[in-house]
Length: 423
Image (cartoon, rainbow, N blue to C red; front, side, top):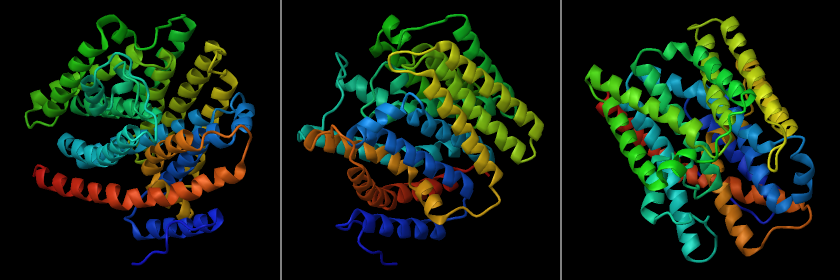
């Protein structure tokens, strides 16, 4: 199949061409849960706008953020979708080993390519990297290799990578519950985490950012966590039931220690993020008759009430407005609910296509923004035309990274998983 040029002189024409390519990507791809892809597409657009508005729409952003935190909206939608999909992926395979193979080939190849490009741009002086203080290159590399860097006292090379640390923690928890045969208790786990978040705020429990790293040092914590994570994954993937149980529990304990005690976001919000993902799992169970819709609805009410209450009691801060967070959170839950209600209807092809490349969109856009900020610089006044032009360049580029990196690596992962799948 031949495709027209990805980028044209006109942003409008480029967006039109990209829309047609997204439709072809969606229709040509394998059967997927279209409503979840549509939600991914919406979340990706909002997150990109949130970050690009620093560069092109600073005045509008200044007015919008106190009322509606676009960043939290996008990532909460992503977390709900992950909560629905990830346990389903593990339980469909019924094998921890093939689950981890699938996750590694899904997440790491594009991540490695983006990090490599960023390092090359930084060395050439085209883009700037974050300051890692006194941490050595080795500890920074190891922390990022685990994808738990945000929970190991190490600033992320790209700001957006912080959410992958919580995704990885969720993977560890899901595997832990599966190996000890408690995976059907998703709703209970979601409620417990949400209640703990609310209790921590009302009790005034405040921990400094990266508290454990400050206590034992980033280097020793990174070394211990990386070894523990490797052992946990290997043991949980073993054939022996005893080793599987040990590996699963070790990984789960690691996640439950790092998220509340070494995160860079407030304690309550880290717990809410995990609760939101397990809420997505509770919805999956109701959808697949593993639980009742009444049970899922009760879980949603508890998680939403505790999350909103936690944000309200936390109050306003220098970089946090409770109104903006609460509005974003509620709209994210409503967006997920709307997608669920429309799940039996056909979604727009361009939106499901955008969801298919959403991981590329999520990882590539900050690199492009870093280049723009270091060369052209940020606009002092709003410029909607440049915002549109940014999307017109970004989306074709993400189509390219999906076709050249994501899609082939996922194919390789599926082939390897079939080879090691136990009979």
